[in-house]
Amino acid sequence: METNNDNSETNSDNSYRIIKVGILILLLLSPLVYLFVKTSEPLGSQGQSQTNQPTTTDIPALEKAVNENPTFDNLINVSMAYIKNQMPNKSIEPLQRALQMNPNSAIAYNDLGVAYIELQQYQDGIDACNKALSIDPTFQLAKNNLKWGMDEKNKTITSIKTQEQLPADKKTIAYYIDNGMSYYKTGNYDKAIEAWSKIADIDKKNTTALNNIGSAFMMKHQVDDAIALFKQAIEYEPNNQLAKNNLAWALSEKKKAK
Image 1 (tube, helix red, strand yellow):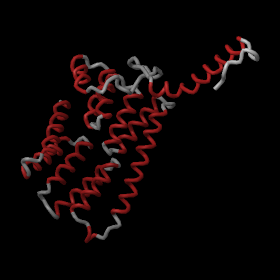
Image 2: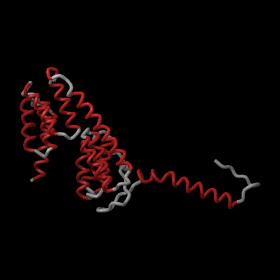
Image 3: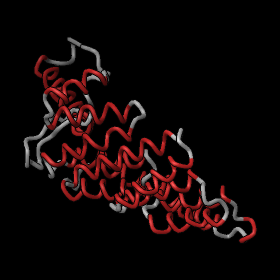
Image 4: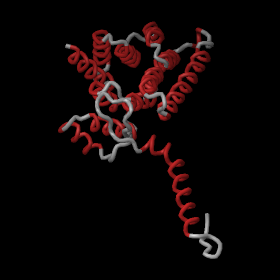
């Protein structure tokens, strides 16, 4: 910090120092400007700055804006509000719609990566962050999120190695649920299905296993197989809300594919 000294400094010296301080402040703030004060980019543009911070976190207002005017910016804003309010599952659909409008948006791919990582679908999150970086290699936020996703995936792989050292006679339903979930988090859906399918040898009507296998089939885009399993889970447990939600999701995806 400097003080004025009329006896030793001229006005021009003061002006020069003010300019230098101003330039220094701008240089220090420029990374923050890049990361957090981005404005929306035109469709097809890769170099424009844009924000991944909603101007409001009023979810009903943002949802209304999307319903009335489903623009790229409105879809991004509502998806980020979902993420910030611990509802990453609800952010996937608007982000996918935003990417249909602008497949060259690093911001949308980065946000999709965050949503998947928060949902513990680490490989999907890694893929989305890598896509963001293929569009904008300088995007530091995507680099940070990519590292986050890779760290979480590596932790899960370590957990899988520990799980599979357990003797066969110790592998209970709880073990297979956890083991399958670990594989699911890493994007290895076939191994997840294999683990959960072993529960049938112990309990053929285990609705948790049926629901989980159905979810893995959804990730593999085997929608009809998933629907059959969700329906079976509901048959065995009519009040299973998770299976009902997943069945609605699967039927919705099947309808979209027609």
